Structures are given as C-alpha cells and as structure tokens.
Length: 387
Image: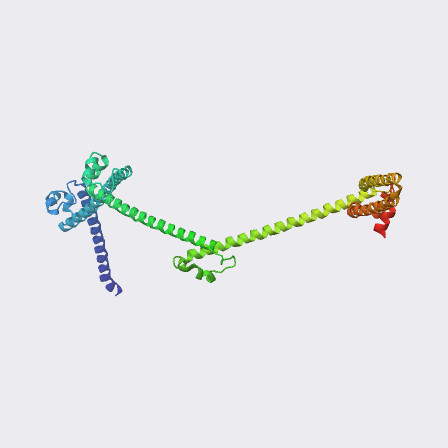
C-alpha cells in the first residue's frame, strides 16, 4: 500500500531533479557561449566604440559562435562590449587631456617667467603696449609654445594678467609712498611738539621733581589738546631726569661732606703727630735744661738785650764826661742819669711786653735767660711781670 503512494512522488522528484540538471547545464553552456562570443568581438579590430550594431551585424553572423546564441543575446553582448570600449577610450582621453594640460600649463609658466624677467629688466612695465611687446618676443620659444596651446589662457591673456599686477603694484606703491609721507609729516610734527614741550618744561620754574601731571595741566594751555598721551610721556621723562639730577646732586653733596670729614680727620691726626713731635723735642734738653728751639729764641733776645745795654752804658759814660767838664751841671747830669735809667727801664718793659709772645716755654726759662745778661734785668722783670 505504501509503495503504491510513494511511486508517483518518486517519479515527480526524479523529473524535477532532471529538469534542474538540464537547466543548469543549459545555463552553463549559454554562459560559455556568451564568453566565446565576447572574445570573438574583442578579436574584431574593426569594432570601435563609435560603431553601430547594424553596420557590423552581417559580418559577425558569418562566425559559427553567433549561431550558438540567440540574436537578442548577441545584441546584448555587443552593446556591453561597446560600453566597455567607450569607458576605456574615455579614460584614455582623460589621460591624454591631463598630459596636454600639464604641458600647456608648463608652457604658460615659462611665458610668465619670461615676462617676469622682462619686468625685472625694465623691458616690461605698466605702460607697455601688447602689440609692441608682441613684436619684441615673437621669436621667443616661450611665446611660440603658448601660441600653439589648444586650451587655457593665451599669450595676450597672460600679458593682461601681468599688466593688471603691475598696475596694482604701481597703485599700491603710490599709496604706500603717500602713507609714508603722511607718517613722516606726522612724526616730524610729533617731534616738534615734543621738543617744544620739553623746552617749556625745562624753562618752567613751577615744575619740580615732585610735580603731578594733573596739577600742572593748567600750565600747558592749548598744547595739551594736540596729543595728551605724548605730552604725558615727555612729562614723566622730564620728571625722571629731574629726580636723577637731584639724586646725583645729593650723592655729590654727601661725597664732598665725606671728603671734608676725611680732611678734618687727617688734620687732627697731623696735629696730634705735631704735638707729639713738639713734646719729644722738649724732652731733648741741653745741660741748662732749656729746649734747643727755645734756647735759639733766648739767644736772639739776649743779643737784643746786649745791644740795648751797650747803648745805655754809652749814654751813662757820656753823662760822666759832662760832669768832669762842668761841675755846675752835676745835679742836672745826675737827673739826666736817673731819667735815662728810667727810660731804659721803660724800654725794657715795652720790649718784653711786645715780645713776650716769643717766650713760648715758661717764665722760669725767661728768668734763666736774664742771668746771661750783663745788666741787672731780672729784678726789673720780676717787678714788671711778677708783681
């Protein structure tokens, strides 16, 4: 019973497998036939990307590989092949065009370089005419290769571009020169204003190192309306100069004061050494106990006293001679002798009064000096200076 039902199903399955097998085999064969036909088309050198199917159909059907495919399949394969050819040709065309553009761009660059050299040499400037310039460069290789270009800018276009750049540069330089002149005028004006303001500050007696800008603005008048920032800068600079001068003045004053102190100290040291030297000299006494320098002064005084004593003795002897000749005048001569004695005493008193500053050491040294005189002066000296 089961075999009865399975037998028809098996038949159907076997038929289905057989169909699929035959269909797959047919597809495989068709695919192979298409590939062979495509190879056939590629082998035909007369087939170009621009050729039409109707013009080559008869020539293609003579080959047995065409009979293996349906006409519709042959047309489809032909169209796909033509599209491939067109794509390849387009790619080749693009490559050729790119190479051409590169070559033409290089030619234009060479022509620009030539014009730049002429600009540098002064042959080409903003006033140069194209016709005149073209006559001068018609035999240059850079001009000839650009003239043969199939695309891009022409030689005249490149010349015009250079002229535009020169015109712009000319205008820019002119504007730059004007701006430079304007800036120079402004700088000169600022400098003149700065110099005048500095002279004003220097001549002003009211501005000192401790002055403030806000307090002094009323002194500047209309000057402050021109450029307050500049004037403030100069004002600060001027005050710094005043402060620097004051600092140097104080330093100089302190330096001079220090030098004076050094001189005073030196004088004190020199005076101390002098006092010490005098003390040392006082210790160097001779046999009489008198200092050598003082003894020299005493010798001078002694000689002066001896001279006065000689004069006194001469007058005294003259009075005795007068008494021998005229006894009547004895009393007058005696009076004269007494008067001369008094005058001598007064002269000695005046002498010692005027020259006592020479007797530097001591009164005892002076009394010692009087011992060497022939006139009895020591008693007169004691009465006059001691009492």
